Length: 275
Image (cartoon, rainbow, N blue to C red; front, side):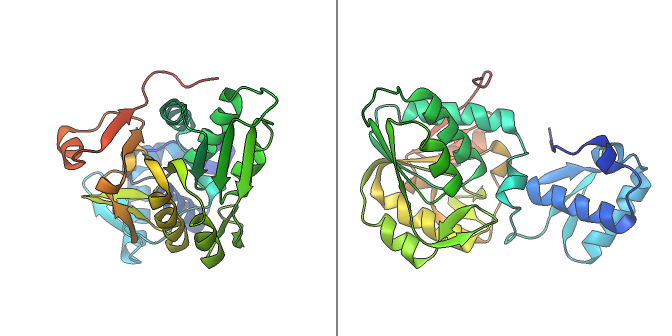
């Protein structure tokens, strides 16, 4: 499946060319690649119309044509968190449950902001028993994650300070990085924009700095990332793949991709997502 967006039928009809092209561009910002036939079906126009749209966007340097489709040609742009949460919710829920299973023996965790780590926090709230005493401490730079985790009285929440970013509903900056360095935890759970070769990468420099600060603080370092983001280079290196102890993804990886990950454990979240 090349793309899954939560647009309604009414949003795809009678769009002006400029508006349609903007939505097409937003699609590529959410997904590594899209086929022309799927776009034509979605917008209820001909393939020739979509092809002209792609040619226009390619001429502006925003897309790169491929056989039967196109790929995004920018690496330093990422949609807002609220947009990313619409993509692959089923896969994200499965991955979140796998992450929670992996860190079930941990008592202190760090969790960065992200569309999938938000699901991890949802699962922690549902999974950690409400015993009347604190059994899990969670440190996060995400206001959304902190708010959700705080609904379970057995989870102590430490919210990082910093400069608030509305696009990510999270704190970033020097204060955030310095604060993270004060704590040592059982596990770090983070997401990323892509994996390219031996590197974990991200489009957001401030988010990448927070991830780099979190990594050395954890005994276990869990990267949760969709299969679609493999072989997808982003603007800035976060770390080497070998600095991550576990990778959780939503679909089986090709043999050559998996072998490139060397000793890093890969966990595929199969089956159905929890309710």
